[in-house]
Figure 1 (tube, rainbow, N blue to C red):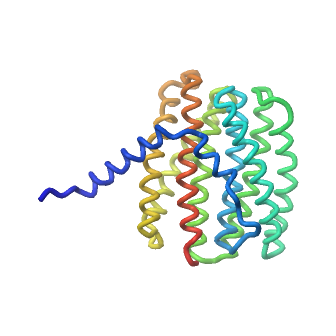
Figure 2: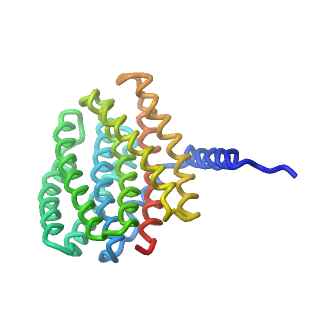
Figure 3: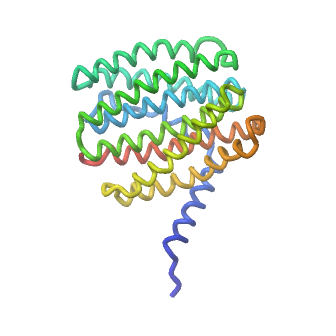
Length: 282
């Protein structure tokens, strides 16, 4: 009787996941921003999940804005931007309301103020090279505060699973951050800085994937979803590597579009992983 080695089984699953990634469209991942959300935060794991999603949305909105500046994936990018703005605002209100202590309430008060400014940079005028630097500066402030809130919610939980929800949620953000800086570099805006940020985020993403895979709390369903995410990562990482090989001027509109789509597919996978960790009893 012929047996299949675990390595070969893993490779087969990766190839299947990769094929699905190649066939996927952005339309299939827009549901992330438009799906119904809890009217209120259900518990601390849910709060960490939503707080972490705010980090991701800050980067996803920037990515969508830059795609519009590139004039690639325009209908999808516009929909991603609009739906992400709406989801960010809804979750911001939920997280402010749920805040269990004054420190967290203060963070979300600051985030609210930073968001008002950033929203104006995102939605005023037509996305273009001239406004890219201001947009990136505003999105950095929003990301910093969203991350601060996520860490504070994790501390309020004080449980190992809370940390894993934070780590998994940060993978969503890193997927969008890498894509955002790729698009920024191709405009180009601070291409050297963008390349360094992509390299840093890539290292962090790979390391965190192993943390999630090896965590004692990882059940069979989580490990299977992480395996599927590996297939999405193969496609996304290949698109990023083409920039390093070709230089700042080496990407075509088609390749920029591929990065946009691949980042959406990877985001969808990592959002499912985060949800599975958040559903675990703390």
